[in-house]
Image 1 (cartoon, rainbow, N blue to C red):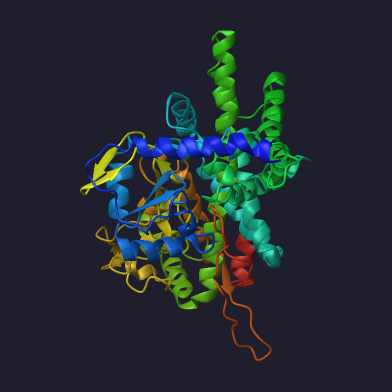
Image 2 (cartoon, helix red, strand yellow):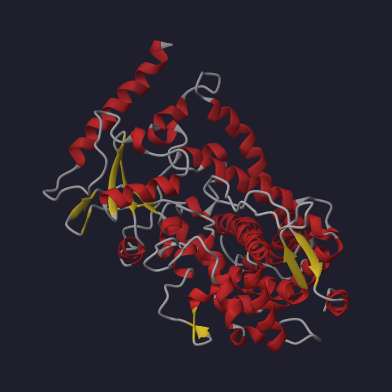
Amino acid sequence: MSTIWLLPLITVVAFLFLRRLQRRSSLPLPPGPRRLPILGNALDVPTKDIPGAFRAMSEKYGDVVYLDVVGQPMILLGSHEAATDLLEKRSANYSDRTPSPMVEIAGFSWALTLQGYGPWWRRHRRAIHQFFNPNAILGYAPSQRLEAHRFALRLLDTPGDFLHHIRHFFGSSIMRISYGIEVDEDPVDYLTMAEDTLAIFSSVFVPGKFLVETFPVLRFVPAWMPGAQFKRDGKEWVKTVYKLVELPWKCTMDAVNRGVAPPSMASGLMENIAGLSAKEAAQEEEVARNATAVAYAGGADTTLSTVQTFFLAMASYPEVQAKAQAELDAVVGPSRLPEYSDQDSLPYINALVKELLRWRSVVPTGVPHRSIEDDEYKGYFIPKGSIVIPNIWAYSRDPTIYPDPETFMPERWLKDGRLNPDVRDSETIAFGYGRRSCPGKHFAMSSLYMIVSTVLHMLSIKAPTDPEGKPIPLSGRMTQGVIAYPEPFECVIEPRSSAAEALIRATAVEF
């Protein structure tokens, strides 16, 4: 056994030695916890309550904190200003990702979020942008509206299954856009595929969770060895993940070949391949397949965390719900459902959506960026290859920007009955920074508006009550992982009136 581990040990020592030689700057490194020999700050990297622990470090050491994790430099950005300065204004240098053996081991090499910055990433990003830019999503409005109406009907019929209905809403609408597949008419459970894939993603890519990320040479150890559970798990992860990438794509391509495929992202991207050489066509098909899977996986799962937060907030803050419903009653009235054309006339609804993004961060510490070259910031040296972490959760709780940050309060976004442009927009934080910001953010925002306005206009959401009829407080706790969700909770969902119920049943049909 000692012979087997000799090569990895020698490699690690050489790696650390070369790391020490790489630093050639007279500038100091940013402040941070005291580093131990060899290990550096490996023991300082939190494994629980990561955003809270990182915020405590920033409060102690400043907006830019340096950690050395066994030779790997890590930069923690403690403020939105620092994140904007580096990840937005210097995005050419901070848009890379740290190469991770876990990307291949878990089967995520297709995922735009994890790809290194360069031509291959740009091709994927361009493919997604083509179908999810602000102009493109205007064409999805009828589909989003229909799905919102069906969502309200499902809540009316089986309110106890509201968490399942939320997942169905996003999975159904994004599957139609991405692949042209109607999930209710297809025997394959595509919704579970997306759920399982994102669960793996959220669990696997927590910074520092696997030692192989710090010592990539460990990828070569046999799966049977003690400590190589990640390789044994990886074989199962890959099977699950590649179902999401391959099965809906094959279904759509079969429909394309038979001439019966409805318009979709997949079929649209394949139209661009006609006339290319065999080699170019193969590359473009790989990009199209990967980009479509990214659109489906991201659209089917990530925004649903915010919709779960919506139900949590409405059950916890009935006075907010009442104000939102009063605005809808005044603007929309009792005889129809909200439209996208109503949005500019619903400032409280828009403020409520912004508060949802702020109150519970979906990706609390973002997906770490990586510096491509050495840099200097505020008199400090930032080494090439540094992992750079924006603490999004902490930015959304800056009390100097958002007073009483733990309270759900849409009024913080309003002034004189209108959205206040002087308040830092939660969209600039929630969807990431620079060239790595979420390419589906416009689709997400339009979906959130339609869900929030439709549900509040037709339904009431309340906390469950105890035997004495008193509301039971909801914990509001979030799960741990790259993607955070509210922990399971219950709420009571009822129609606001018999007229509202009749309107839901009348409108939840195909247009």
